[in-house]
Amino acid sequence: MDLATFKTQLHTNPNSIEFDDTISVIDLLYHFEAGEFSNGELVNSPGQNSGSCKLFAFAQLQNFNTNETLACFGRYYREDVLANPDADNHQNIRNFIKTGWDGIKFKSTVLSKKS
Image (tube, rainbow, N blue to C red; front, side, top):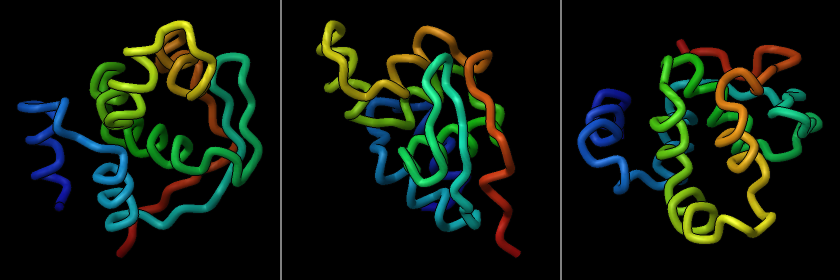
């Protein structure tokens, strides 16, 4: 799926987006270099939670709002987090719900556009 199709799907039918769709678009367009990032008080070391790292960096580059970003997590957000609000899994998603973009900080650039 190309970026335009992905964005159209995200805006018209966000519940149809799956995490793997998001990662596929990112991998198509960007080189990834693992880096440390924080999400609220949660600090992710380089290589730890690389999927979340890629997704947050991509969403930031695309200027996605909080809801668009959460939709990019697919069923991890819809089923694992929203359907189980008291669980303690998927801490990056749960922290992002609380802190939004104010909580996301990257120590380095993790995505660079492919030529």
